[in-house]
Length: 242
Image (cartoon, rainbow, N blue to C red; front, top):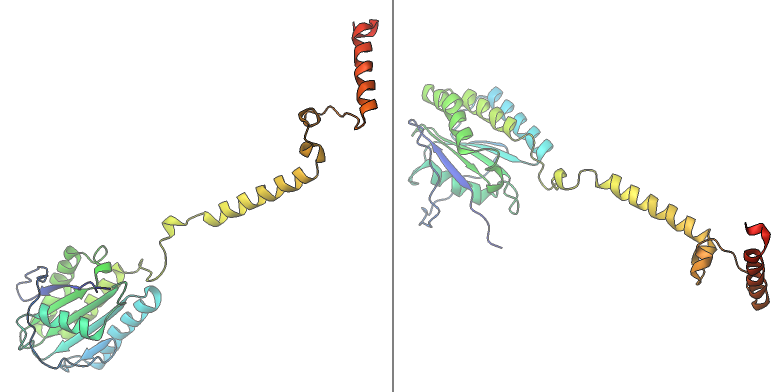
């Protein structure tokens, strides 16, 4: 099965918001950094307190929703041409989010270039729209990175992204398709059982003659049948009928 590529949006100093090109290109042949958990501070710019806060938010998000969010800092994006390219390469290399369901978020910060990029799995796009990412960048990431406050900016960004992702449940069918189905199954089963037991308690309803089903109880013998018919005839000719 072909794996869907993630979507990356670059958030540089001028916040140029765009989608990464879908056309293939030759990526630089370099060794990418290894993952270090929810927070991979390869540039060593995050203080312990901010790192712990970011990790706590990401851990809580994955526990509640199944969405995997990872924060990465690198000294530089070189020899990659953009933060988008670097972030997309790491996202794919590390296998962030489920391969099948694509519920992953990566935030990359390049210290030397003062650039940031967000890379999302396809299933996150209805929730984390380009407008949401641009807003988070403009309010939290860009101002903090410009001042060198990497920890604060990343923490506020992951909190905002986690807030938008709260309703996602990875691997759980949508409840809108199954809401109330248990009630209807119970109701139909109960009515079927009641109908069945009522039917078997009325052997007259299973008799092959229609008039038995209408409540006219005939005798089973031929003589009785004739007698009843005669009695009926007598009734129609007598004074009692009028």
